[in-house]
Each structure stands twice: as structure tokens, then as C-alpha cells.
Image 1 (cartoon, rainbow, N blue to C red):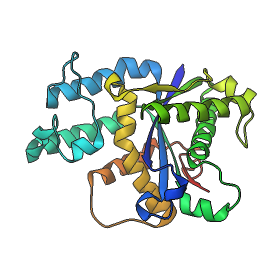
Image 2 (cartoon, helix red, strand yellow):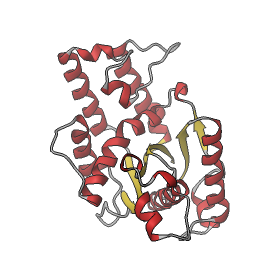
Image 3 (tube, one colour):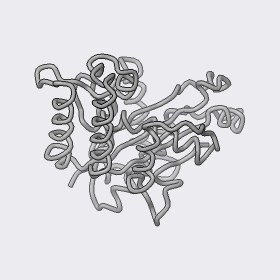
Image 4 (cartoon, helix red, strand yellow):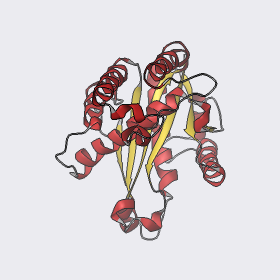
Length: 260
């Protein structure tokens, strides 16, 4: 069996923006699927859901994107009908509960990081990616399996930055795991990066889960939460109950990790 970690980011990786409350946090969320399961279950069922509600066609596939769904932008304008939205949300939640996957989220408070390490300024993105890969390696070790990592493309310069960071981790190791160990568990020194138009099911699930995962981190690590009830809160219930990666029964530090 081979697993893939599909990663989505929420937030700004720029350390210089950490003083701005709106750009203070960077959160990387990885969703782990077994690759045969992706082809046999996840991808067909996700496509069926998109055809049912949005008329997606193989020649012009609709890509699920949380923000566009939330604001009911085309092709999701059909969700302006309250009953259609209710049915879609209910079916999507059912799928997020039924599908077999594990979630790892790493969040960094860039302001705290900058204050704590006034001289040593470790790049926030590289730091988060390193910790995410360490936990993916632990998952693979438990499963006695191998895997690789995929991100959604952010564009030329950002993609190159991601790939350089990943390759550096694989060739030099992390602070806790040497490169030989990582290369025993991960099948490639190169990061896979795919465009949104590639219609990657795992990346779409990661996009849907990333904001709720960050919201869980805000509440549990920073005591930052509001009282409004959102669709994301229902996703959080699913993550907390059964999808966050656990080690010895613990989510904290394994399925969800705060930095620094």
C-alpha cells in the first residue's frame, strides 16, 4: 500500500507580516489517502457528487473550492437555493465522515516565532513543512508503508520555493529525523505539485478541510474562537472524532501541532 499526503495552506508565510493580526498565522493541513482508495472510491464518489449538484463533465470538470462554494459563486450558484444547499451540505458531510483518511495540521504563530527567535529566523513555511513531514513519516512507519507528498500549485515562484524546501528536507533531514530515515519512508525526493485544473480529488478534500482544521487549532491552541455556528464546525466534529491522526490516543502534537 502507498499513501499520499495532499496539502493545503491557509495564511501568509511571510514572517515580515506577522505583526498584522490578519496575517499572523500560517497553517498547513495534510490529508492522507491510500492511493488505491483514491482511484477506486474517493475520486469516483467525489465526481458523482459534483455531477449530481453542479453538472460537472469530464471535458470541463468542476473543481470544489471552499471559498467559491461559501460565496455561491458560479458554478456553485445553485446553492443559493436553501434546500439544494441543505442537501449538498448533508451529503458532503456524510462523505467526509465515510471516506477513509487521516488529517495532520501544523500551525505557526509567526509573531511568537519572531519574538522567540530574534536572531535565528527559521522560514515559517519550511518549519511547518518539516514538522508536517515528520508526522507523515510517523504515520507511514505505523502503517509499515511508503508514501509521497502533493501540493496544489501556487504559481511559478511559490512552486519553486515549495520544491526547494521539500528537497532540502529530504536530502538533509529534519531536526529530529535524518535523511536516510525519511528516504526509507517517502518514495521521492521531489515534491509533486499539481494545478487546480488537474482535478485532483485529494487536493479538493484538503481544500475543504483546511479552514475547519485551522479553526480547531485556533480554539484548542490559542483560545481564539467565536460563538457563531458554521458549516466548518460540523467538519471539525468529524475531524476531532475520527479523522485527526492520533498517536497513543493523542491528537495534540501528532494530528495537530502548534509552532513554535
